Length: 402
Image (cartoon, rainbow, N blue to C red):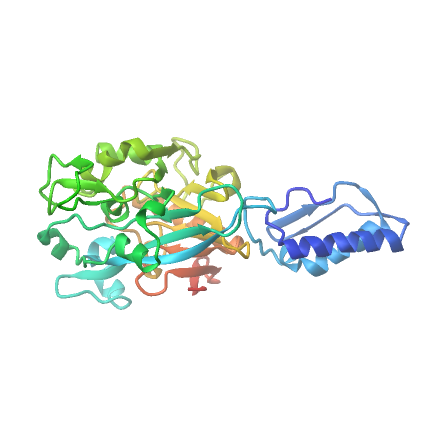
């Protein structure tokens, strides 16, 4: 009866709806004309213009059991009641210290330092946040999916000190969850900067033959490199890979070939639609012309990616659903910490800061409209956040389930 609802109907609600339909048909029989009903961003369309009064009673049951639709609250965007679901585990893959001025771009230090303190070297503490997704049912798809991998353990002492790295990495984070690296079936990366892709490889141990020998080991403790997840396929945007290989970046040492070349035979490329037509220069508050559902690419059963350009041109966010059917979006460097929610809070590392502002606006609007739980990639304290309008034309973050 319902045509293209924007959200997944929880199974218990679907059963209640079916029961209401049978009861209504049994009790009532007159015809009732009903056009369409809509609410907020969720719209349901009754496929028949004329319905039996029993069907109308069932419609009332729908309103009672699914008030979320009529409050404009949507569980998810990709539409199917049998969508595969995943149990997420937040993995903290060690600390990272980055220059505070670079992290906040044009925002003056006198402003950002009120929110987050810098150390004696001007660095702020951020995190390597990753997600382990474990399939929550017997549906098709991989059992273990890793989102992001952190910086890894390959840097030499000088660079470990520069970036404030510890001995804790994605390896030890997975070990704490009793998940061996060999059990990871698939890895999805938001982009290929070293603090996101570096953990896909590690230093080879003395007893191991390396999978790759770095030609330039100036930043490494050793040139001998081993794949961290030998059984995993790795998904990244095709544009991101092309830019990484030739270092299209405002930084000279962020796309590191020793992080890239070992992955070649394990890569799955995806080309998601751009938010705006090629060559279009969007206004600051302009929204993409197509709905976000049309710009999502399903890369694994129940897992979708979509472009969020600005930090890099091929940066992607990742959407999936937890066992309760709630949508969760792993959020990359369009919103690295809770302190970057403002319109002007772009990083000096962004290839296009203006586009970051444009993207952040429509991304936050989508998060508020669809009740996404965001997981911020570098937030050191409370990475899980929800979004609400702030009543002043922008948005605010509300700490969500951690």
